[in-house]
Length: 179
Ligand SMILES: [Zn+2]
Image 1: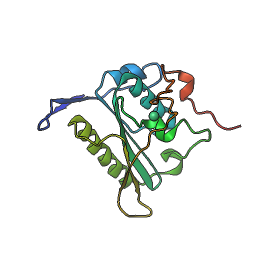
Image 2 (image 1 turned 180 degrees about the vertical axis):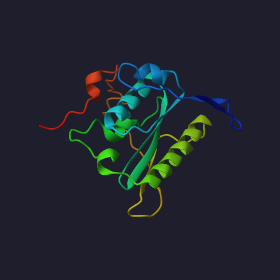
Image 3 (image 1 turned 90 degrees about the vertical axis):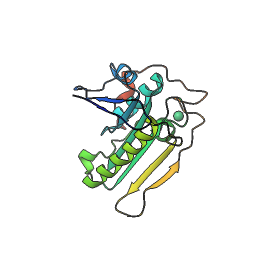
């Protein structure tokens, strides 16, 4: 299914659904074929795969995640700093909680999805300030959505002066549990 929408002041936008899995062998091509990636994967391997493919293909990404009562949304630019690995570094060694294991508060998913949509529109409409900040919400504690700037890591393997990412290596996107 292909949908098209027009926004005031913007070129036409087209979203296309792809019936398939994003895996290391197709990640760069899929990401390169789009102007913006909205990532809502339920596992860190896919999140890092999207982030790395987008950096290599110079594409913006709007990331989001929700587990239990908390969620976040953040956007990374195609070449700007900080990037996703500045914040999360690498796949966790221990099996992290996922929404499938730990559960998730349904309405929070809708709220974080709305934050992602706002960031996506900001990027597509070229509004400044969309990249490099994270919005976080903790529904259990209540209170407002908190937004804070992200800091770039000096030794980030993806976006720093000593960046070493040059290709998608499939073995980098497999969860490796602790001994
Ligand atoms: Zn980085």
